[in-house]
Length: 168
Image (cartoon, rainbow, N blue to C red; front, side, top):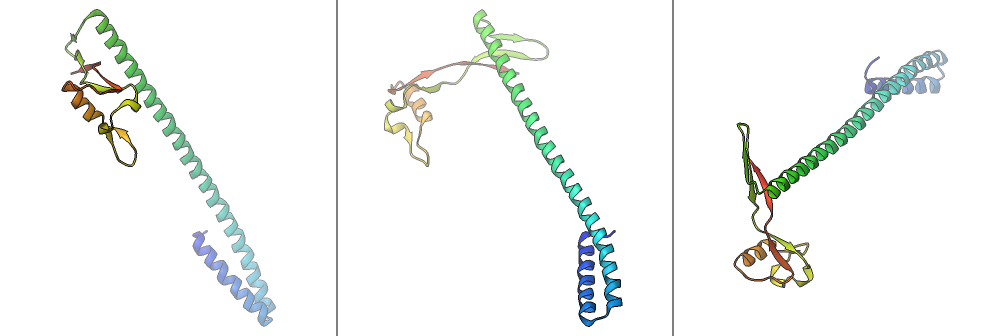
């Protein structure tokens, strides 16, 4: 059994030869060509069935890999969420006890202040100077942060400082 394109080309050539033999009235040649066409047709059918079985197998493999990727992505997200939750627990425990540093041979854990960040309480009250005009209108939190750090009040926003953990 050859390649599909070779088999289909052979079939087409035999079919054209069969048509010429039938039109010319050469019944013996037409019968021989018809028998050859039947044989090639069976081989071609088997080749098509086998190839489509392989196509289905590839589609199933691709689907399985897509599902595996989804499972892996979900697992990674779950691990990231668990790590974030544990960090919050450690930060909370350190804040509750007043501890700012723990160290071992393996690592040093230090409770440190985060850089100041702007928390928007009411976007409607933010002055126009802090709105950037792009494709999508959004607040200029960096500009607000800079002004608020210099002591300029911004109606509708406040300056907050949180804590995070630094591992080294």
